[in-house]
Structures are given as C-alpha cells and as structure tokens.
Length: 365
Length: 271
Image 1 (cartoon, one colour):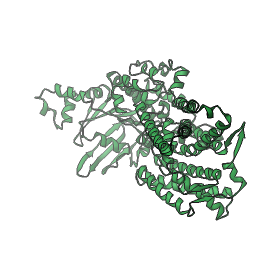
Image 2 (cartoon, rainbow over the protein chains, first blue to last red):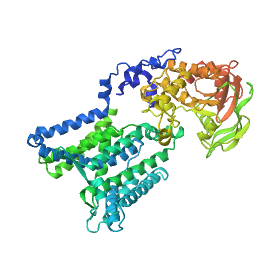
Image 3 (cartoon, rainbow over the protein chains, first blue to last red):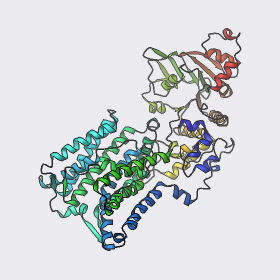
Image 4 (tube, rainbow over the protein chains, first blue to last red):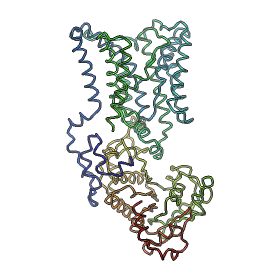
C-alpha cells in the first residue's frame, strides 16, 4: 500500500478494477477549488466491461467449458438425457457439502484466517448425528441441535486459540483436524455408523425429481444457505467488518472493530456449517465412515479461491465460491467418464488446485 | 475557550522503553483552535509523544490534561471519547474496500426498521451520501464508491481525514500527512489543514518538512532526544533556528557560524 502512495496517479494503472480508468482523472491533479466529487467519472465502465471483469463470470465460463468437455469427449453420454441427468444429479449432490462448508470458509478467508479441520468436523457431525439418534434416541431436531452445538464449541475453541492465544490457524486447525478425526474413528468401532429410518431425515437426505432429473435436497440447502449468508455478508455491519478485518486488521482494530470477535464468529460459523454438512451427508447416504471428509479442507479452500476470494483476505463472494465448487466438482466427473484411473484423478485434482491458486495470485499482481 | 487557553497539555510526560528514554519530562501544550506543529529528527520522540496523546502508549510517568482535566487513555477509543482523533502516517485504511466504507469503518450507519436494526443492515445510500458530505469538507475530490487502492495518495489522505472528522473531534492529530505525497498532493493537504482550522478544529501536525510547517502552523514545538527544546511562534521563527533546536542546541548562536542552507534542504528531501 505504501508503495502505491509513492507513485500516486500511475501506480494504480496496473490494478484490474473496473474503476481504474475513471479514477486517474481525479488523482492528485484534481484542482484545489473543484470540490465536486463527481468530477471522478465512471464513464468508460460499460456494463459489459464490468461484467467481464467480475471473477464470477470467468469462473462460470470455466465451469461451462469443463462441462462442455464432457460433451466433446463423451458425446454418447452427454446427449443421452437418461445418463446425463444421472451425472448432473450426482454432480450437484457431490458439490453440496463443499458449498455448505465453503460458506463458512469464505467468511473465514475474507476475514484473514482459514480452517483445515472442516473435513474431520464433517465426519464428527454426521457420525454424532447417527449416534444420538440410535444410541440416545433423540429426535431428529434435538440430535441436529446437539450436533450444531458440538460444531459451535469446536469453532469457538479454534477461534479463541487462534485470536486470544495467538497460535496460527495453520497449527490450530491441523491439530483440531487430528483431534476430530480421532473422535470420528473412536465413535465408529465398526468402521461406520448408520442412520435409522426416520421420515424427518429426508428433509436433508431426500430428493425431488423434475423432468427425469433427480435433485437432492442437499443442493437446495446449499443454495438457500448461500443466499442467506451471502446477503448477510454483503449487507450487514458484521459483513463489512469481516472484509475490513481481512483487508487490514490493524486498520480495522484502530477503527474500533473487535477483529478477534469477528474471527471467532467466523470460526464458529465454519465449524457449525461443517457439522451440518455432515448431517446432510449421512442423511443422504444412510451411513458414514470414520474416514469421511478426508481432503475436504483442500477442496473447499480451492473452491473458495477459484471463486475469487483473496487467499490473503479482504475480498471475495459466496457466489464465486458456489461456482468454484462446481468447477471442483466437475473435474472428477470429467475424468471418470474418460476412464482415468483413480490415482490419476487425485493427482490431477491436486494439480488443478495448485495451478488455480497460483493463477489467482498472479492475476492479483 | 479563548485562543490562549490550552485545550490539551501535558505535565512532565515521560515514556521509557527499557533503558531508552523516548520522551522525557515533556510539557507540551496546544491552544484551542491553533495548528501546533511538532517537529524533530527521527528518533526525537514525536511518534512516542503522539502515541501517548492518542491512547496507543501508556505514559511511564507524567500527566495528560484535556480541557483542563487529567485523563488517562487505555486505547484510541478512550482518546476518541475525549475528542482526540488521529490520522496516522500509514493511514490505516482497508485498501480493497470502498472510500465510503473506509470513511465509516467500524461505524457504518444502519437502516431504520425492525429488520434493519435486528440484522444491523448497512444503509449504503446514506453511507455514500454522508461520506460525500464529509469528503466535501476535505475538498479533495474522491469518488465515494471507488476502492481505496485505486485512489491516489492525496485522496487516501483525504479519506483518512474524512474518517477522523466522523466522530466530530475537537483535536485532530496528523502524523506526517504530507510525507508520502507529490508536491500537488501535499499542497492540497496543507490547504485542508488550513480549512479545518477555519472551521474551529485544533490540529497537532507532526512533520519533518519545516517549510510545510512554517507555512501552515501557528506555533512550532521542537523535540530533540525526547525533550522539548522549545516552542516558537511560526511567523517569528526562522528555519535555521528550528534546525538548530532540532539538532539539540540550547542556543541558536552555537550554529551561526555554519551555513545551514544545505542541511535545511536535506531536511526537506527526507520529508
């Protein structure tokens, strides 16, 4: 920031923001007696230009290209609604947990932190849910409530250790990842746990079929939560403070924002949503292994960053994360349909994640 | 209060960091409605002194008086509550947020109505409108909806000042407001300081740049090695006398035999 101040008018030229061109007019050259802020024109930023400069649009086209590649490589499947509807349904279903967890992760990363324990939290959430229903005979709502409270306590622990004790989130949440994975294994002595047959569980795990396309309820939860939390992030004071905290924590502190509290709330939100994603998943599958959710943290962070959230905080949207999750979800579908072995899938997914984050960093320079 | 009343003063204010005496026994005084410049070389104690005045550092000993009453600040919010606002050299802006969001950082106006209050929904229209009003007071044109990182150094200074004015302070402390700016940008900021004084604000201006200081200030306080070397009326003092004080001379005559024009110039280029 200081280097930008050293070269006032020209220094902003390399920024890719849509406003850049209009701004140069008002750089220090603005005359002393023209007190009119509107001297700064936004002309030149046509709707189209602004659209193109939005990361979300780029990510959406990226998704369409990958999706279209299915048609290019496997036209036999792509143009057969019977098989394609099944693939589309699976794609949406597979990305739902990424999106639900990604909501919290986006808040966290915009606010300047991240959480690597979400995959383990997802497993503990689902397994605890089944355990409370089977062994403790709780109602679905009571079990759900208890699981979310467990998530809240985990998030609170992460948040307090990071902000108040000053342990970096990398260490804190890797530690928590291991702690929770241990708990998940401990509660699944038989390897996995099953949910009982209860009608209410279908609220999370059921589906509706439209024109031969089976749409899992999970995706509705993912969309609904994205809309609600997207609105809160963009429109509330808390949302503003999340952005400010990740943008420049010292500046936010000086302005009277309790940045520790902002981060703690974000950790709580993330863990609660991760445990909820676990509930939704076990409701759909009917059972869950102690190893469920391994590697989710990386996929979710990749989806968030691909969607345009600045890995270093201060910028990002939930819409971007939603589309980034679709990109992350469509890659294995494309690979499977083209007969790639499982090892290669894992390998390529890793490559895509690193390249995507690298590109993001390069674009920002 | 009349022009002569001190609105802010300190008695034997001292700050030590271990063995380092950053500020030692300083009786600093600012009169209501004046622009008081605080000058000194690097390490003279300017920053430490103002950090005590704005609540960042706790004094080791000595007292601070605001409006005649003794005060102690735990943090900048305390100082703010006593009418003291600070514009830091590093400005403390969030670069990726809009100008309006930065002007209202931490104090975003919320919407009326039950839902607005419950969720604390930010009233963006009002925020942009009021940011415009505040920026107009500073009179450097800035688009309230631009992102701060896309604005110039002078504009960022304007944003930081507009934000400081948000809480209607009595005293505005400005730390090196012109140091990172172009000549044009510096001139604009000096004009803003002049305007704010006309609007009745008391200003403490920390600067390296003696030419800027003498052009705008009513009085000048000079620090050297943590001590207050002297206070002068700006229109009665010469550049050389200030430089002599900055270099720790008790008496200007000690320096009379030297040609000070070179050191005066170098004093400005570092600023």
